[in-house]
Every structure is written in structure tokens, then in C-alpha cells.
Image (cartoon, rainbow, N blue to C red; front, top):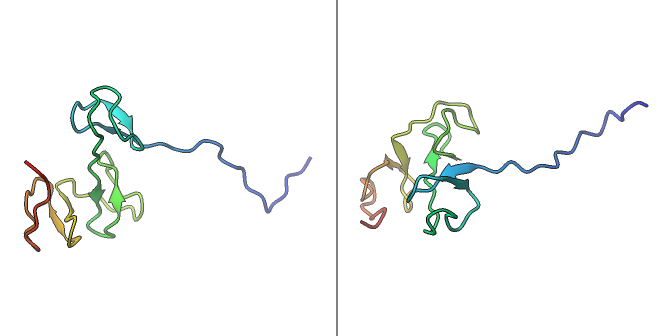
Length: 101
């Protein structure tokens, strides 16, 4: 039996990203709204590629979109979308507060 050349196999499994909870550190699916271990609201840090600007998982070594090495110390401002340091409380470009203390 010969397979048709214009069809491709169908992937029946959806790949789920597993990321650490920012409260307790246990690994949970990225699609979670709450951590099943500590019960706190799930907040995931997304790192952005300095080259293409697209988001990546925090445990990535290379950008999944363009293949460049990810700078783990930076992310994008929630307001002006410019690159800022990971631990910044205020954006150095627009001055807006990034996270609550």
C-alpha cells in the first residue's frame, strides 16, 4: 500500500509547556490558572528574544522562533515593549511600574 504524497501525518498530541510556579517552584503546565501544589495564581515569566522580540519560555537556551541565543537577564516592558532588565521595578524607557512589591 502506497501513501499519498500530498498528505502528512497528523500529530494527535498537543505539546504542553511545563514551567515552574513563581511561588513554590514546582513544575506545572503553562495553561494553568492556579498552581495545583500551592494554590496561588499562576504567573509565568516569558523571556523575549533581543533579536526578533518574540516570547520564549524561561528555560529556553535559544529562541524558538529565530534560533538566536536568548539573553536571560532581560524582558520587555509591559507598556512600551522595550527591553528592560529582568528585575526592574520601573521601565527605564517609559518610567511605568512593572510589578507590585
